[in-house]
Length: 494
Image (cartoon, rainbow, N blue to C red; front, side, top):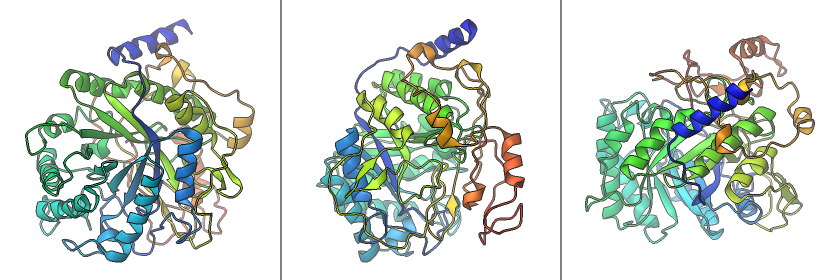
């Protein structure tokens, strides 16, 4: 045990001289308007869910009000498909109807007093064509025009953050930096001169790969019109399950060592980053430990990390293992899921929130939710659609204290029988067993049925789960969802 604690202490020290302090931003993603966006940059029309009670059964406005009043959060990242807000008209104007609905969600966010990040959830692609890198694909001018329009709409709202793109992957990083510069120039020329801009890197903007992939070096050259980098922030993502995909309820490690090179780089180069996606099984004991440790490290290095956002609230149902949607409603009161109250809330604000809040909002409303969730490991939406999950590349070893992860056969029961985990001190960060280099590909954002999501924490257990007889009437080993996408490489991280 002593050797494990010593290894954890060494790992913590390797992060750099930790600067404990108050994080600037804490919150969650609010998914729904990204549903239908695929890892290829393609888009399934009809899968989008607007998480407002006037359009669906998901009361996103009420959720955000709850998170602000009960949890003290001040940040929401609101993903949306590029095709959806342009009504599939590349290079065209913001669609009056669809963008109007997106703006309603942004305005509901702003009404809480929080910062609200636009996230174009397209993987640096439009219909399987990389921006400015594939023949017939979107050009830098078209990408810049999108951001010029968005910046014009929100230039007088300093709390709106411009998140240029969700999880670029498998592209030329130097050329991608040129595309980012075009978007930054367009934003600043449109008059949004002080809004924060989030820059994403290669390999699904993996925290572990931000330095090895060259993302940090080339994105550091992206500047404002005056040559400064003020309010230009790196965006990073990280998931903690065994294959780093965000598709399993169990966590395998805190992942803290995977931040080491980035933390050092940020400090040496006077730059900052935002952990814009992370998460785990919402009531899994392994995640109640590991996610807390990860977030504590972010808080302990608040000079270089401005905050974190969990994946995800919004339009997810109870069968989605990474859901951070609170239970209840605005009328009856909300109750946070254990992962949010014990990790995200406690690390950001120093206390838990297990009692329902009584804040009011638009009401819960009824509606048809179709859904398809995604993002790094962003998985199953509620309703008739499919979920999507994704990850991004990197290897990593056992969790804190050297204990082997075990399958969560009954997450609720396991949580009730497990003492709440508290935030671990820096000396308790686990050392992990990260691979030396190269995790260039992604475990894939698969179309997934509820039976596809796994509570397994090892490849063998996951394989056994995949071979189990499904409960939806389909044949074992088959998905009941038509047009299912797969990706053979599962050695990657979110």
